[in-house]
Length: 355
Image (cartoon, rainbow, N blue to C red; front, side, top):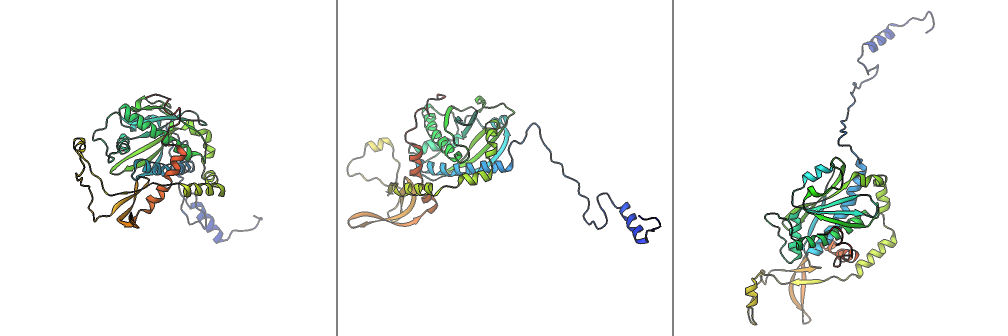
């Protein structure tokens, strides 16, 4: 300020106003001072993966859920609904404590990731799957028990296919081959990571007819950290895009695949003793009435409701109702079966770990 200059009364008032204003406010400021929020950080439970990385893992396992739903729907000859449920970061000991015993645990390793991971299926779903595969209605046990050797062998075969489907879902991020290391029913006997190591836990919900349950896939953080830079949505969208050649090949594979169609007049249950007494001329009553529409199955899955008739001397059916969503899922069953060779497990899948 030049010597001799004097402040006007307005300038003096403004200076006094600024001096008496609360800290953080000045002339012309209308926003009150906002205190910065402090976010708590638990050093015992460090967050290893960002939200974006978790979102990428969610996309991978949503794809896995869709393919697994298609495969099991064809395998169990009924619609198996599988959906992504949640993703969490918890310690390995917390994961162990969250599981009931007995349960079904498949420990697996991959060709490109260090260490082992876990695929766990609740036995309520496991027994419903076994019952359906053996020709039953798909019911589970009222009291869950440890699986027998035969039941374990069936679950081992199915989990081998599930792991190959998981490998396919991961191929856009990190291609790898999967090896089933061992099967366990007691979660306390599984030690794939230190108790306090953080893990990524992905949970899928599974519904087979009236039976509901969950499947968990658990990766130790040390297994996924080397590829953490690949776990971005940008990387996912770039690698997930299929080339025109791949799309055309998949389309041709679908169009040339043959599907088994079956018209089911009805079903019934009889005792073995009654079946042994059946003779020519005996009448067996089914569970459907002759006026009712019958099931028209595609690959063993009921997709249509139809009416029975004749056409040019042959028995025929007329479609009355369809399930488009289930029909689309069923179209991919044949391709998945050929892709994963579900009927013949690969050599070496059942050798590791033993029963």
